[in-house]
Length: 180
Image 1 (cartoon, rainbow, N blue to C red):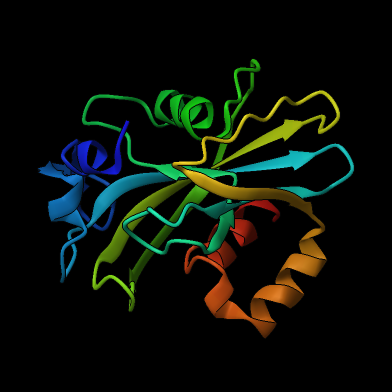
Image 2 (cartoon, rainbow, N blue to C red):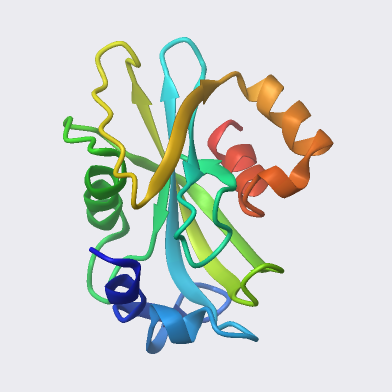
């Protein structure tokens, strides 16, 4: 799916407590000043304690080429967060394995992208999956993902503190929730 098609899809607008309030296109929800909407962030943790990161593709409309968690997205109105997340894992990373995802919390945030002028204002459901990295098959879509890597959480925290502009603005918050 091209980024222009993805920008025309609907997202669910929500109140600060997560109650549905309507719908908007992805593009409208991310146009300044931003509209609070439902999203998800998936963290994959391997059995040795490493997190899977993806570098967002250069064509992403928000925060391109920044490192982020395994995958992110927006459930369509009426779609469960877990079902939408499993679909995005398949689309972005080619993960077709039977994964179990557990919601570990919600990260509410707002971030302006200085390079594109767009805004992330999300009620972000954080999902965690435990995987065996040796058995997980990844087939990243180059239109979605520039690179992937497994990282030690302590090394990630150090790197985010040293170079915050290399990472998505939501990564620190969703990582804290996933690893608590």
